[in-house]
Image 1 (cartoon, helix red, strand yellow):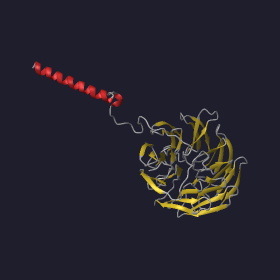
Image 2 (cartoon, one colour; image 1 turned 180 degrees about the vertical axis):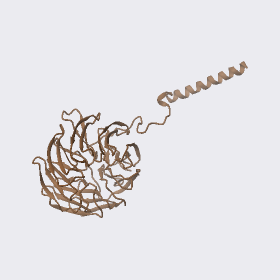
Image 3 (tube, helix red, strand yellow; image 1 turned 30 degrees about the horizontal axis):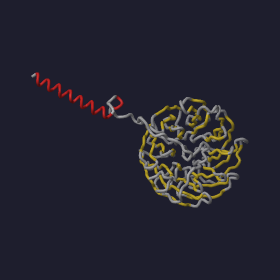
Length: 410
């Protein structure tokens, strides 16, 4: 019996020694090495998401929401990939580095690989995500129908903070430097009738500005001011420093889309078929275009000379910025709630007819189109030679020129 006990002790001792050697080679087995299911959106590390100056970081492409892309597109695009979410995609994407960020009506926010469309992470909110993301300093700021503005780590999807409003958030967030220059602020509109300004780092409220009805679109920022329209039919301009009113101009009907803000002028359409140029300094309407035969939910894009937008009369309209006179129109086969993106000498826009269009900026001539087949209410994001857009079929689509898209796509 003693011999058998001795042999057992030797065997166990040898096994312990072998295990010790094995784990020493592997670097040790401590608590951090235990294989446990990780919490969603909390991987240990991820790539740093950096804006290199050519990104499409937010709805409208920049804080003024002027819809200008800093890249080039060939006249013939090819489908690169598609990614299926759980419901319609009305959110417009952001593209930063090699990542695509977008919301879905399935109540989630997604980060996808720009090269392949592979999911990098997702984050579930408590309601639809129709709003578009704003990506700033490695953080994704996005609102949800649950009334919260979320701040998510762009690399991992981990929640940094969330800020509660008292209504749905359907429009995109925007951002500005704080007046003292030591911080950054994030602004968003809500169905609680307010614009909320919060600290980007902590989510603490800085100020709020209250209107008389829902705010559906995104605020546009320029020259130390925030401009937006609302369901109170007013075009508002407020000071970014403290949220006090600068100007209010009656548009004649409620405003569902976002405005573009450039050179002291606000460009926006309303539900009663009118498109306006509002001069903020003079607090007046500089010109009105009333030849649209449908409500305007599309947000405009601007060049030095033109303002371009879609309408529910099935047309894309291009007007002279100085006078509001028609430069050209392009007819689609469905309503155009999608907002245009301008890329060099081209305009990209979607339509309820299920097609993504590329038009000549000079004359509105169709250069290319792709039939997805289901309505497109999302707006295109354009960066790094690629176009990314969501569709009511639940997919996010990427298009580009295979083999020549600034070396990013494969």
